[in-house]
Length: 527
Image (tube, rainbow, N blue to C red; front, side, top):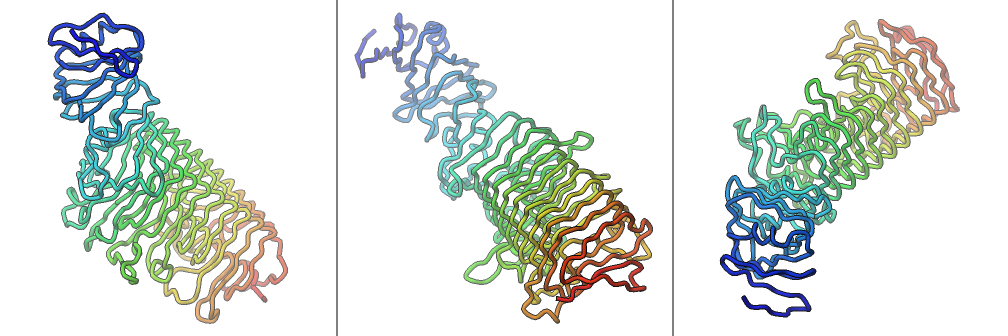
């Protein structure tokens, strides 16, 4: 046995079958992995650092207690055999390179340890497929951090159906974070444009019945320009897809260029409902039909038939301060370009900015009736429809639409959609049912302090209304500023439920009128 003094710490070179009596604060360089567990047992509760300076094969389970730090130097690593697990209770040094190899498992007992994909061999170079390394990081620790880099993802894990395929599987009680725009998860080229549904459809992150999960400061490059939807096919390409659970926080992420149907989806898992989510401060750009431009020309995903940036079914959720934008509305608004779909009760959507979407907000009774939804203080620009009440499956109750700024878009858009700031669709029809989204009424609704205006350069080409409403029971519509409309200011249509107990404050520039063709009173804009 030889003893060397190194940086005021005792360095003990472990012999093949022996170890020395150790002292407080010592550093031990491991020379024989076959007796690693014996060394750990001998150290007991003493504070120590184990230096790993070569590759060590681990064939059996090993537990490293909190008093022992692992330091990986000079290319050292642990090669963990299949079926073996290394459980680490202390700190680890050397997290910026591969220090764990093999098909076995690593478990970080200390939830404060930052685990990086690089520990498991991720390159982050935009060329190497890092899927397996990233998944191992997620499986191993409660704090996963992505340093600067582009992490290419291309290995699909099948789900219970092809729409739930995923690249990465989330779990409960985990925080996943990055450095912001420079920590990029990127879909591999041509991952989704094949014709086989089971092998050519995927989402980035998918989790089931999750509890206490945070995803923050990650950039998701969904690479839609090189993953266009094939004819007659459905491609999800969600960045984040969570089915069931509670305590979800999605904050300050950057999501771009999805050729699929949504970017963020949180919904129920069968009978297991999701609730209590915060989706805040995220930036989402370009998806669905328009997925950005290359060399100054728009990239059009011509086979996409359905898109909205967010789809929220979790009750008791907050959707706030997100920036959602289609950067070329003249292209994107030719086709579905939804903003935020709210299919949840006790939910607030506040302080969001939505540009080039149609509609900006869906408030929908699907699945089932919904209540206590607030849409307030949002900035909506270049939209054909601002806020839409979709009545698929029952009634909406206790709805507040307050202090939103809604700018209706220019006349170059050619679309069959009704143009309106706030709308309950498809009144005055002979049929009221789920396919027409008019299968119920809205009870106790407050539409107050909103501004709706029309920025059309040529207002004669494209008629547009401030509000088109029907089936309101106990409604207060007051102090709204509606100007520049080419159609009506506020129009009420007929329905089997009618409208009752509706208070309307006619603001300057609007005049009450009636028209027998409409079956209800409405106000026309005179400004």
